[in-house]
Image 1 (cartoon, chains in turn blue, purple):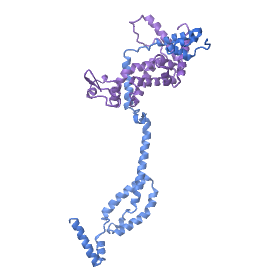
Image 2 (cartoon, chains in turn brown, yellow):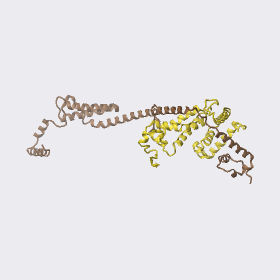
Image 3 (cartoon, helix red, strand yellow):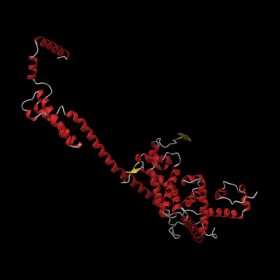
Image 4 (cartoon, helix red, strand yellow):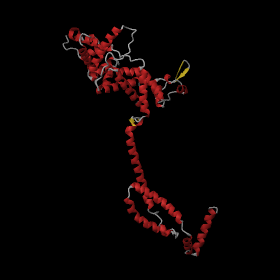
Length: 221
Length: 208
């Protein structure tokens, strides 16, 4: 049977490459046009293969090496330095995002810190400075704190989170300074103790004395 | 690790310690490609210089095939090595460094070729000619002929040119060409076929 269809480009290329035998294409034996095309393909590919890259001057390779070296050094130390763990992105691209991320993180931390401080501020709020000279008792300090705590929410709601953080810090600082200046501690003063002891019955006093002695023996005093 | 003639010689793999003290202190040029990559990643910048010196000719020649002039081939070679430097941490050592660089170079060339048509060098461009082999007149004829072929190659459509260069000069199989160019094997063969026919047409029937 005569193969009337011409050989396909794929078949001809396979023959040129040597991956297909000419004998596997019976049409080639009968078709002068296909044979001529095959010859042309072989001749052209031979012509192309014979073309070599012109050899540059001997010093060219040293120049190319130096050029690549300089480019790599710029890459390594320059503004375009890449960050491998970010898929090779350059610092030029990354730093604005990094700065924004740091800013957001700072705001979040500040806000959280302010929120954590807020409930602590209420019971231990400022000691009234007017009471410094009079060595306030526990009751008066507590009362002052309660009044200040009632005022606090309005004042705190007015500021932004950054201001709140600053206010909280200053407030804590003021508390410690106030307490030191006023000689205030959460332990009761002597007059309060005397008044409490005076109200005890003789049996209660004897029991308290026994407990105190036990405690002193237990602590090695 | 293996021994060669009683001398301990490590066979390193990427990701493992690349060298002992002898190699750290010894000439870096004696390291293998894989060791050079590891040394480079370990912070020895001179290791990449050695990689460049070893592979620049191959990379340059491939680039020249695509762009047909020395200046663009130099630019392209530099770009190939920069890409390699940036991606060095991703080199797994599955293929040789040469193969890996070749892939990078082909991709860079294809990108360049799709971006701009190559400008071939004039025949009288400054060129090193070895006069010991054949007379100057014959060399000139040959150089002119080569220039015409390069010029014709530069006029081919992008994929035909790429397929022909990869097939003829890089000796890729049609399957490899298809993968590289993102086409089917049949399309890769068709590209080579039409590239050859168009070249024949451009060069004229009397010259081939």
